[in-house]
Length: 438
Image 1 (cartoon, rainbow, N blue to C red):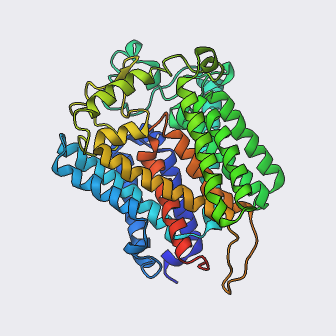
Image 2 (tube, rainbow, N blue to C red):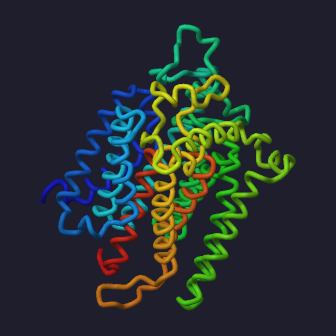
Image 3 (cartoon, helix red, strand yellow):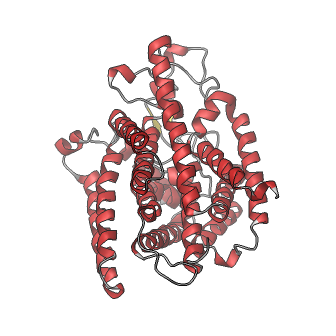
């Protein structure tokens, strides 16, 4: 049997790819950007090989059209980009992530995907707590990345802002721990994904009851320690989504649109409230009145995007800190920002209103297919209904978690965000076209 056909290889590749996407910062801090690029190129190479090996199971025309249009628009933006060199680099990263996500979608089953996600999240979450514990017990001090981020000078360590530290040794102080990913907001979202996956595995009984409970408890503890308002809001939204899918299973198809209208109305209300609620309510979820200085960043980005509203300044993925206008666009506490902290503003800035419309169509169609996957009874090879399973909640919960995160972060446009949303978009589309496929 060809090595690419072995289940163990595919599962192992999925775990490695997901860990790399989730913990890219840790890899860059440990072995530098060049080391991370080398790892990413190897993973992309295997992803291309898997896509070629599985060429009979997918066609370009079967992939989600909004995804293809968005990738085409981002690629074409190099022709009008204000920073063509940075656009080419960003396109390389975006296409690599999309290829990896597509390869995972066509090469592993839903059950294998759940297993791979569980293992990857246990690795990242477990390593994060081990990292923080060793640091607090033995090092007892803040630690900087082995390889500094671009633009950071270690010659004057006293002047380095706190956010540049890999960890600030806050585990025993109850502060915002950063884990191996070096970012409390990122670790909080990883913990939320872990809670989703571990809960589904607990319900499906694919993992032992005691280990499942312990890992869910660890994920909840990480969410508490990272103190992310975005995660708090996401949990509320996900509870609404679960309720909606339960309702969808009980109503006729022609009435389902009303359920979804209610869901989107609630999500819109929660989103607006997260920005517009009074100061004392912001304090309850751990946010300052300026949303941790995000409002200033949003104003700068919106002003710049308004200068090229239709097609934007050119795709770039992560902002290139060496290229104008990103070199002076936004800075918080001495830290130059690499994204707008809002995916929709970032898309508007980079590929304009046209890009926002296409991106919205991509997200909405993926969310709808994911919801239908959770609400419709799956069919067996002979067209027989197989009954509902708890695993069917996996895509809809992850998609809506990513959707909530777009309000405060732009991670859906880079690394794990693109990998996961492309993976679920493609997999739900292929499942829709051939629900009886393995």
